[in-house]
Length: 357
Image (cartoon, rainbow, N blue to C red):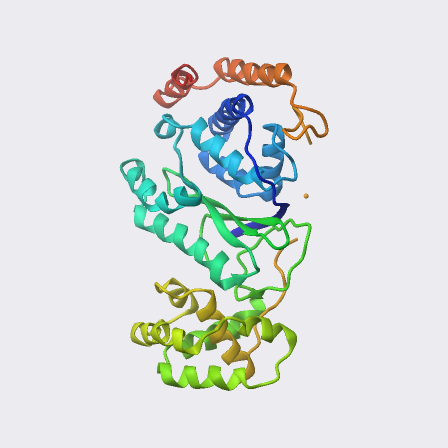
C-alpha cells in the first residue's frame, strides 16, 4: 500500500563528490546495521515512511527541504549496497530519469536470489507508477522511480514527480506487505507543504466512480465519444473545465477501442491496460460524474534534524570530521556486535571489508 506523500521545493544541482562518497558509506553502514539487528523487511518499512526517509536524508547531510534529497539518498543507498545485495537480502532497482525505465530488467537480474516470482514485483513496480501518474492526477509528472525489495518479495517504492509551474516536487511512498489494494485508499501517512485540487480516483469516496468508470470502459467507443462531445458543450464548474482541458475525443477513440476489446473487470485491470493514461481516466470519470452522477474525490491525499549539517549550509555546513567519525563508530559497532556465528552472521561480518572505493 502507499504509505505517504511529501511535497518538497524543486532544487537543481547535485551533491559534491566528497559528500556523496560519505553518503554512500554512511547509508551502507546504517542499512547493514538495521538489517543485522532486525532484518531487511524492517529497513523496507523504514524507507516507506516519509518521515523516517526525510530524517535519513538529513542524517546523511543533504538539504532537508530539497527535492534532490529523494534522488540523491536513493542513489547513495543503491551505490552503497552495490555488491552486497545477496548477503544482506536487499535489492534496489530503478532511479532517476532513464534509469527508472530499467527497473523491470534490474528486478529480473535478481530473480535467482528471490523466493518470489519476479513478475509479481515487476507488476507492483508498474502499477504503483501508473496509480501516481494516472489514477491520482495532482499535477506532478513522475521522473524518479526507485523499487527496493527483499529476497522474500517484500517491497518499497519511493518515487517522485515534478511540477515546474509551482517549483515543487512530490514524493510518493509505497510498502508492499500482506494484502495490497493498489486502487483504494493506498495512503497510510502523508506529508506536504502545499495542497492541490487533484482528481483522486484512489480515494474511498471514488469507489462508485471506479466501478462505473470500469463499466464505461467496456462500452463501444462511439457511445463514449458521443458523451464526451456532449460534455464539451455544457457550462461546467471550474474544476471540470480543468479536467476537460486537452481531452480530444478523436484521439481517445483508439484507446476506448482497446478497453472495449479487453473488457476489464475492475479498475485496477483498466488502469493496467497499455495506453490507458491520465486523459483516458479523466474522460471516463467525467462521463460517470456528469451523466451518471457518480462524482470522484477531488481531495488531496497529502498530509514533516540535522546530525552532520546540510549540503546547502543550513543549519550549518557539513562537518566532515564529525561525519567521518560517525561512519567509523558505526563500522566498529557492527564489527564488534554480539551476533550468533551462523553462516549468515559470518557473511555480514565480512561485508565491511568487502566494499572499498
